[in-house]
Amino acid sequence: MEALIKWFVSLLPRKLQDIYYKYEEKWLYLVFGALTTLVSIVTKLLVFYAIPGYPKWENTCGVAVSWICAVTFAFFTNKKYVFKNETKTRSEFFRVFVSFYGARGATLLMEWLIFFICCDTLDMSQTVITFASQVIIFIANYVLSKVFVFRKKKGAEDNA
Image 1 (cartoon, rainbow, N blue to C red):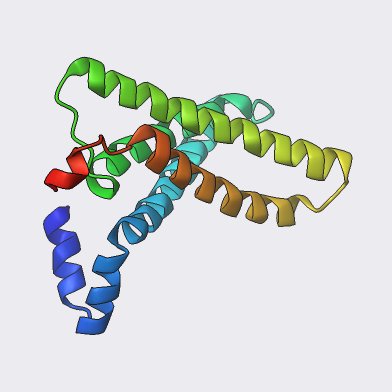
Image 2 (cartoon, rainbow, N blue to C red; image 1 turned 45 degrees about the horizontal axis):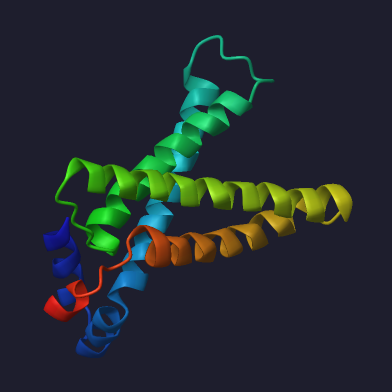
């Protein structure tokens, strides 16, 4: 994957390459965020339409499966490609894994709260809030991942 990314970037004009490398982490987060969204949509549709006899009125299961698949995909791609996080022990990996899921769980609750306040209480457009909340959640996920989940250890930045 890294070779594919480097190859693609090498096709860009030099000025765009410079911009890419200056903001590499953010660009990669954007790309893998889009792919995470695709994983979410595909798994949700698979659960909704590909499982024979799946009760169409029961969406909670499909949403839960979709969320778990998307967050797991996001964890591994963010860990390896975006934040380049290396864990040396199982306990360190487990700490990062749990904190990632915890952070994503927090933003899931944040999204539910946004919908409750904006749509259920203030009767705002679900469509508008869907798009607005995605921007807010996307930024919150990045900040939580950068600051809490994949934070660089003191001294690690000095060695890089």
